[in-house]
Each structure stands twice: as C-alpha cells, then as structure tokens.
Image 1 (cartoon, rainbow over the protein chains, first blue to last red):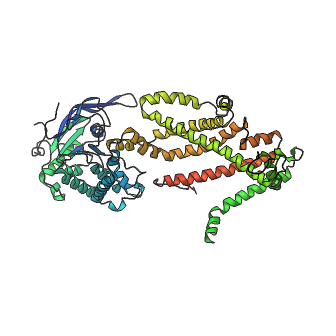
Image 2 (cartoon, rainbow over the protein chains, first blue to last red; image 1 turned 45 degrees about the horizontal axis):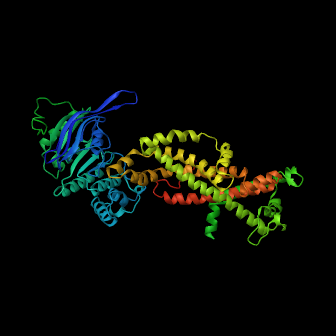
Image 3 (tube, each protein chain N blue to C red; image 1 turned 180 degrees about the vertical axis):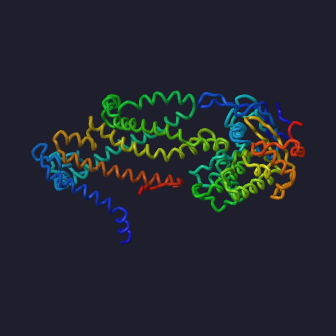
Amino acid sequence: MRLENGIAIKASQLSQSFRRADGQLVDALSSVNFEVLKGQFVCLIGPSGCGKTTLLQIIAGLLLPSSGILEVGNQVVTRPSPERGMVFQKDSVFPWMRVINNVEYGLACRGVGSGERRAIAEHYLERVGLAHVARAWPRELSGGMLKRVAVATVFANGASVLLLDEPFGALDYVTKRHLHNVLLTLWAETGRNKPRTVLFVTHDVDEALILADRILVFHTGRIVDDLALVAPRPRTTDTLLMPQMVQNKHLLLAHLGLETKQAGTGATSSIVRAAND
Amino acid sequence: MTEVRAFFRRHGVSIIVLGVMAAIWQILSLLYTTEAVPGEPMIPGWQVVFTRTLISLSDYWQGGLGVPSVAEGAPPSYTAALLAIVSNSLDTMVRLYLGLLIGGLVGTFLGLAVSWSKWSRRTVELPLQFIRTLPLLAMVPLFQLWFGIYFAGKVAFVAYGVGVIFFAGVVNAVKNVPQVYIDNARTQGANRVQLYLTIILPSIFPELRATILLSLGTAWGAVLGAEYLGAQSGLGYIIVYSEAFAYLDRMFVVALLFVFYASISYAIFNRLSLKLLQWMPRVGRVIVVG
C-alpha cells in the first residue's frame, strides 16, 4: 500500500495496550486513524495519560503498536530511523559529550565525515543561539539551553519528520516563547526545499495555538477533535486575540475539561474542521 | 612556602592521626613484650622494623644482577633486601594487574552480554549468577589443580575473583542507564555496537567506579590467597615463609607494603577516573554533613 503523494504520516486502526503492574490491561491508543500532510505542523493536545506520548513513540519506531499500521513516507514503521527525529520530554542530551559532540552525534553514527558534520553542527548551534557554548559540558547549561541543544540536534540530523514530546513543558514563559520562535524559524526555512513535518505534543493550549497548522485533540486513547488553524504566521499576541482563535481556545479548554461546552452560542460554528467532514 | 602551608592546612590533621597511630603501635610494642618464639616479639616496634627486619628480607633475594643470595652463602645486605622487596613485589603485581585486566575485560564483556539480546542473556545470566555464589578463597585449590601453581594459575584465579565482581557491577549499572539516552541514540541512527560504545559504556562508568575500587581490593586478596598456597616468589610467599618461623616483624613489613601499594593504585585510579568523569555535575564532590 503506497501513500498518496503529499502525505507524510498515516495511522490506520492504530491501537496500543499495556498491562499495568496490577495486571489490568490499559488501552493507551484505541483504533486511531489520521493522516498528516508533508510539511504540516501538527500539535497533539490532551490531558495526561491520553496516549500522546505512546503515539509519538510508535511513530519514532521505539514501540511497536499492538495492532494497526503506521506508515511514514511509504514505509511501515518497525524500528527507529534518523528520518524521524525526536525531542524528548526528559533531558536527553548526553552529559558525557560536549555540546558540539551531542549535536553531531547522529551524523557521526551514520559515518558523515568529521569536517562536514562539524560544519552542520556549528550551523545549527549558531541558529539556536548556542555557538558560544559549543565546547561546554551539558552540566554547565541551563534547562532552556539543553532544550535548544536538543532542537539543534534534531535539525542537524536532517530528519523529515520531527517528533517533539512536550519539549518545552518545564520551561519558564520567556524561554518557551524564545524557543517557539527558534523552532518555527528553522521549520519554515527548511520547509521550502525539503518539507519537515512536525508532531508536537503539548498540554499548553496557547502553545498549540501559536505553533500549529492543525491540532489533534486526544482523550483516553482516541482522537476526539481535529482543528485546522488558518491564522496567518508569524502569530503574535494579537493573533491569539482574533475571534476565531479565541473560539478555538474555548473549544480546546472545553476538551481539556477546563470549561463547559458552550452549546448554541455558536462557539464551534466558525471553527474550520479539517477532519472527515 | 605557601604551597607547603596549603598542603598542611588540607592534610595536617590526617597526618597527625597517622602519626598517632604509629605512636600507639610503638607504645603497644613496649607494653606488650610477649614473644612468639624467643627473639620474635608479637608486636615488633619501629626500631626492630627499620633495622633487623628490613635487612632480614635479603633472605628472599634469589640471586642475580651481581648480588649473591643468602642461600649462596652471602651475608644479608640492604641491597639484597631492597632487591628482594622489588622483585617479589613485581611478581605479585604482575599477577595482580594481569588478572585484573583479564577479569575486568571478561567480566565487563559478559555483563554487557546480558543486555545485548534475549539469547545472550539466556546464555550468560543464570550460569554466571550461579558461578558468582562460589566462595572465592575456597576455589584456590581447584584453580591450582586446573591451572598449575605457577603464573597462569594465579592470574586465572585473580581474573576469576575480579571477573565475577565486574559482571555483577556491569549488569547492575546497565539496568540504571536512563532509557531516554538509549532511545535518543536509536532515533539518531546508532546501531547496537555504537550504542554500547558511545552510550552504555560512558553512562555506566560512574557507577562502575565503585566496582573497580571493590575489585582492586578483591584482586589483592585473591593474589595473596593464591600465593599462600604454593608460590616460589611474591609477597604472599614471604608471608607464608615468615609464618613458618614466626617472623611477625616480616609479616608486618609486608602488610605495610600492601598499604603503600594499594594507596598508590587507589590514588592513580582516582586521578584517572576524575579526568574521565569531568563531565559529571558533582565530580570529586566531598560531602561533609555539619
């Protein structure tokens, strides 16, 4: 089965269940179907334990689904590949390598020559604003800087699918906003010749509204909503105040159980639905 | 001058404590004058150790280098005594470090094999956990019968004693490698060999430090244990020989040599590992509560 042109990721009847320590079977994903277009920036949002991280691990090839098929490009995913880069929720920068060696690690694993990989690593460190700490040990860096190293690494590897698992969750507001700009800039500029598809897991509604072309809402292992955001980029504080964005925010908050659904007020009527309608 | 002062400010108290320990030894030798056999005090004072005992070690010089041995009829001399100490220490240390190297490599390799694949784990884990429970010193006679009382037997015995410690240490340390590092390396295209060389080995090293220090102690115990039972040279041989004649002072000198050598090897290892671990957040940390 070949994917139609323009589709980067396709999940068909994807399910994953775990046996908990108490012996009970828990469904992390139940029969999830979706397609993501090449170059799309998709945010996955939903409460804790709704299966977002599980889905990312399956796409990364770190976890095999209990049933269903996941395809990236034209291939069924069975193992990790540098084509699918990941920024982890936990700190994943290797503390025993200097910053620059971390960024060029994947390239080194794949046998890229030392001169070439050094140049690539330096380029992306520069882009995330960390050229000055290239020779530092990770222990000398702050949490936000470590995330920037992870972002530089994933771009240096040249993956066409980027999987980001609540990458900026633990960071302060200012650092987070800076990193959004860095990420969007890198995503946009490489997007012209080689589109990079992004799947970005978050709990943060504003973060999703700033970043995404499309938001998939998860709840207890299912996709319960699929919103397309057509607001222009770059998005600013004013963008978030556009009526359409405010309505989207209300809807997302309702999905997260923070607001009750405003039936009949028209809150949902203006939302552009990308899902199967 | 300031360096000397700084040295004493850091280590002054420790040096004084060591001095007090030496003084207590001397006082005990004066208070407790019982002799094991006539002329051989149970607690040899320092005046005995640094005169009669030192020169008596020339008994263990087996001749050569133009310095005749006591057995050939030459009188005891400090030259022969010094050569005796150096040559016997070298014999013991070659056995020790060769065994340590072989045991360390084999133990590490087998320990890593437990996590390599399902099949390698099934092959290695249970048999080694079983072998690990055998008491080390009880195995000395077996090793002598299998590998002979010469060089190979002692090296094999040390390697065995060290190997099982490394095996257990590595198995444990690998279990503590954070999954996120392994996942991160795999998504970047690392193959299994690269994963072991670039991720698992560096991240288990801090925990392995304790294993290595432990195995240094075990290695000393093992090499001496092997030398007690049949050796023609080495520090363990001197101890056995001295025991036969109740030369307590000679045994005491050999014990001091152990302390000296072990301290040096610990210091070298510490420096080396701190250099290798300069990436660690709390490297070389000294904890003082209160």
